[in-house]
Length: 470
Image 1 (cartoon, rainbow, N blue to C red):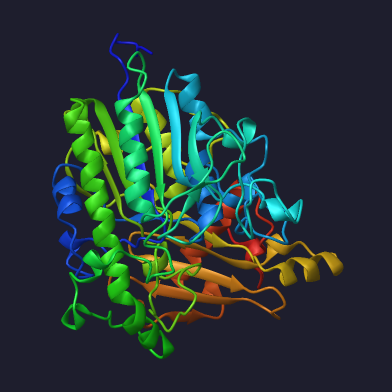
Image 2: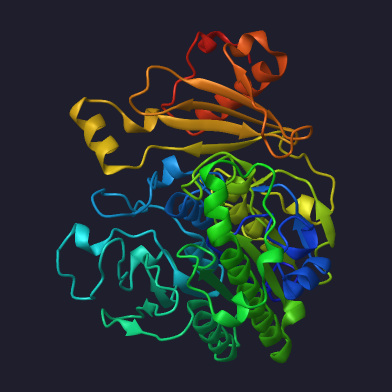
């Protein structure tokens, strides 16, 4: 496929880990993790310091990363799991299809978690899938990815399994990251050289179970390596002391495998002709604020994700503080490739910012959560309520996080304002009784209202805020 200037489009290698938080990178000097390959890659890349997971939970945010649309639009407002009919809407257009239509050879390796669990349909799937897992057969549910070596949701990192183009399960006795990297390198070596490729590699670790990490990485850390963030409190401290070194070890193992991927590009002579992205679907609290559920909360440890992009000679190197939502990933990549962005995409094309050109930057970005338990969905259905009118919504700006929290079944909503510049660990939120009485909260409430209108979100900003002036 040729660009307008007659040059072949670059390859795309898009690598993302599960539950890898922004703080867990060596060069940032926050978590004391060992990441020499990523640190070196960062020095040659554009590093986004304010990349944000719009919905810090696996399936919802993955749907956004694959479409450029927010979870309410994709239909994935909770994890794809047993007991709920949640999966990506069949009429969605995924980035695989967008790139395939532009002449790319497309591939997907690793965790998918955007399909309906097979046990929602039959108790004994022929594929052997159990629980939240699913075999996704060739066809529209792969959303444009032709090469397929994937699974739905399965967390045995030391004995993973996969499916290709038949229901026959492929069982492996190896750490999933190492095996998936082998498959990715083989794909790159065997690629169709007549066209560019777009390969998405989705790693499950450092997602829990945290102890499932090769011992050689675990031995790189001792008790002196344990550094708790100041906001790790209460029972969260016990969780961090139990799991944090294992989490570090998984990130170091991930760094090792990422280094192998980069070396494969050099070996093939295509490092300069490949856009490489390294990021995550969401973060990990690891006991911050006493939070024991790992993610799905508005704290920086959960919504903050690493994001690195390298395209030698085309993109500038260095640090960039633009607010970059996971919904912006698809349109920005398309913009870099010179591919038209579909009108249905809700994220922003920030490719000019990446190139160092004059461009408007977002003043805020949207974060959200919709109730996801089976019981909550059943109760809302029985009472004739829209479950999507509950949960929490918020905006993240350069300096603030503003959240309106309305759990299903609660009598009202609470508002919290975090000054991230002066309170970087978010330990002193300011409760807001009425946004109209606080100039900062009022402006952020207006911005949140704008986001809710943009995506037709049924979440209501109460206490008279319908009267807010735009």
